[in-house]
Length: 401
Image 1 (cartoon, one colour):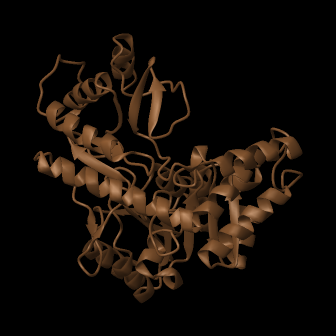
Image 2 (cartoon, rainbow, N blue to C red):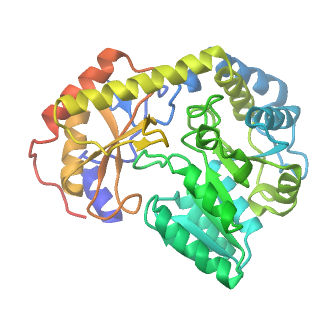
Image 3 (cartoon, rainbow, N blue to C red):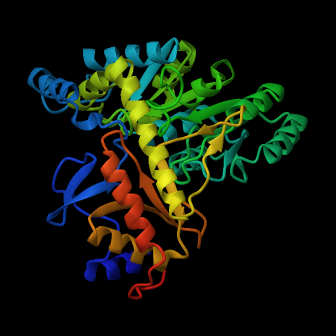
């Protein structure tokens, strides 16, 4: 992979490690030109919201650029505790705990809660940070095929028979394929077999559910989910991660999670920005932004379908209705073709995301289109038309993986 990326960078074709030259909104300046941005996690456009920017500036003026210590020592400010209280109230939980990044949140939480004698069952598509947390804990690990509830049932039956403490770990909305975990069925199985359930809401918080807290709320299974994790770096538009839950869980994590204890606390500006963004999300404006995002997703999926461009189908809820998320994946025939397609879109003014191994199966790469509330209808229509024109085209060969 290192040599593959180097070869592409030398010829100016690399779809990774590009340097942005402006704020990343629905449009971005990169490589000296303005392009429609379809590779960003800024789903609701809050990273440049006036209230979010104002809060970040005020925090710097009051607290400085850094928190200067860990939360255990001197790194806590009133902003940290205020954001934790806001997150707990938003999710209807007793308490919340902030981590500097989403990655640290998952690694720190799992490694603190799981012992070597436990078993963890992960969805094959679970985020890398979840897998790394399990590896760090040293527990026995089993992986189910993506969203395979029948296989989960079989594994939970076996661990229950052996009496092994078990945790099931899934994403609420998966970051590569953009689908949603069937949490109603997963939660029911965990209840039945007395297994803990952790849900990573990184890509669903701010979007799904009546109050936009994520897939857990969307499915109404909060009482069956032991650990709810989210990030501040996607729809919330800042950086960081959090866990919400009972006070006993949060107190245990803040005294046992090494990724929380032994790192400098999140910067005042990022915490203040996240606090302002969460308050926007909880408002009528937040509801309107989420609706606009999903309308854009629907428009892009419909536009691609009208051109016979295949996309991975969205999940269906228990009533058979589509559960849309911000990620629209387009399968591409092999990694070399993916690089060709990406570069042609880039030349035509579109910056898209990509998904390759190990994020997806080897040989099953995806053009990963991340839609935001800030895209205009004209943006979406242009993207659909351009992708339809580009995807079937054969371009110059690129180095093979």
